[in-house]
Length: 252
Ligand SMILES: NC(=O)c1ccc[n+]([C@@H]2O[C@H](COP(=O)([O-])OP(=O)(O)OC[C@H]3O[C@@H](n4cnc5c(N)ncnc54)[C@H](OP(=O)(O)O)[C@@H]3O)[C@@H](O)[C@H]2O)c1
Image (cartoon, rainbow, N blue to C red; front, top):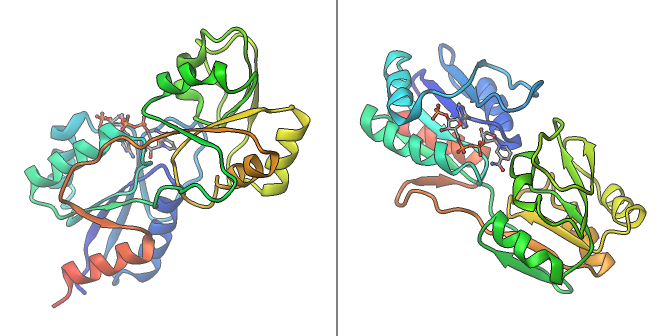
């Protein structure tokens, strides 16, 4: 394989793992740059080069790809980061750079699960009053406004950085970042007498124990479905598959 400059659109555990893998395995002379949106005050930084902040839309990203001689773009952003994913597809096409989307598979319900799939945070908020009174809301600090009007419910939320209003009037926040354990999630549900869980279908192992804990406790789970992604592009389920795709692109 020839040396290449790879840009990873990151902000996820998989993106960091991918950067680790590529820094270790790409041929000498290669460059691995991870891009972070800058939402988290003190992010866990991946190895390789790191840049922080938006590009200025698809055109800005295309300019960045050209001016930094990027040979491959890997969109390893969170499944719910819909804007950057569409920008990546447009920018890669404009700059003639091959694009791979790295996406962990979504979660699937098992025996004993009581899941209520919804299309958005607003729909999740609409569904809640019929399902419980004490809510473990794990959809991140950015979407709390959707739940701000639910004065009859109490919320436990969890985020890396403290949330800013608007958010629910009756709310306690845990500042923490995954991965989380089954014991820990079980204890949170018990201690706070949680009777309904709200989650995005993020997929992956790091935040999955809450689903098993909810199943054990016999409480319903409101699951926000993933937004659409651009059609027809290359997709990998994990970092090793992404490395295989790169090797395929740049060998021979
Ligand atoms: N949404 C979630 O639930 C979630 C959960 C965990 C982690 N994250 C991570 O947090 C970041 C922001 O998520 P979001 O939902 O706000 O994204 P988004 O709505 O898709 O993106 C909004 C804007 O943020 C900038 N941006 C997003 N990701 C970027 C990246 N990796 N590098 C540089 N700029 C980026 C882009 O600005 P410009 O148009 O100026 O380029 C983009 O247009 C993502 O990197 C994502 O992986 C999101």
